[in-house]
Length: 255
Image 1 (tube, rainbow, N blue to C red):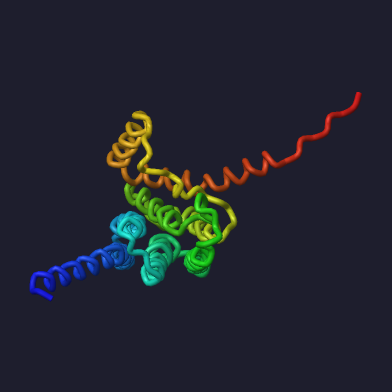
Image 2 (tube, rainbow, N blue to C red):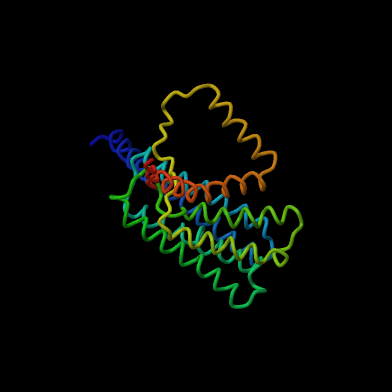
């Protein structure tokens, strides 16, 4: 083998390894964001902790897409992603909620935080075991990133308006329980995985997406919390609508 061919082989191997590591680097970054959120919550910097959760959400959404685009999916990456999600969307939000508002509630506070934490763990375990049989268009139960964003959004909005966690501890308690229990429920949530980004769309759709980014940039806490709250409620709305459609109509009375 000539020197040029040998160098080309080494270069191609290095490139393949770099692409293989790329999705795991995004996963590591998401894990760091979750760890950073925990550290900032312990130091009382709740706004930074909440923002770090949203950063972890973005990074978590990228790692899987990067893996599919570069054809570098692996069992290791899937397991690593689940462990990262448990830290960023399970442990971190539970700790943030507890330190921010639930700590002063005694046993009720840490029980609510634990229910959320175990709900995230069960949600991730169920998701991993149902990958091959689940309907890709829907999630069963509230996804853990959305549940984490619900808590982080609440913290961020209250901090934006100067409201201490102790002043809204019962609201934080209710939101934490709602998020934890909804993660392990059978309520279905639209996943968006059937959206084809390569398909052409009307101009108005692009315009509305751009306006959405403008609104989020104008007021991130309120807009992000509002969007996540609507998504968290959408599953229950769809379930109620499905029940109403299946409900048999009352027979007409004979004259």
